[in-house]
Length: 143
Image 1 (cartoon, helix red, strand yellow):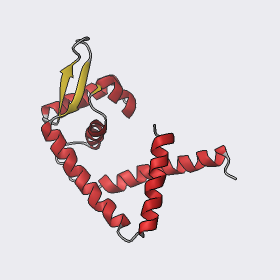
Image 2 (tube, rainbow, N blue to C red):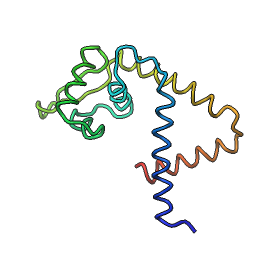
Image 3 (cartoon, rainbow, N blue to C red):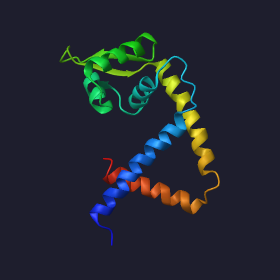
């Protein structure tokens, strides 16, 4: 029997493991002129855009002034761009620029190569189970 407490403990362990996996997949990535935080912002933009600075700030757990400063640096590097909300000119949306899209695509290729190395020896039956488990997590826990 699986209790909700046991499930929570598994979730906590899973979250820690995903952080470790993310670190392992990105630690040797050539970052050139961007910091790890700036990379994480670009990564978030790649899956959720356009997004406001306040949403980015909340998602990354850093203050609005700090997020604004990081976005300004990324804009100066040509990696993201902003647009005004047509109805509320105080509201600005951030998205990846074409150069930002290029950089994040290269980063994902690096991570994909390392990920493929991790799973190259796994039997098809295990890959199917992993895919199904991810599908369940996406549709229930991570919605």
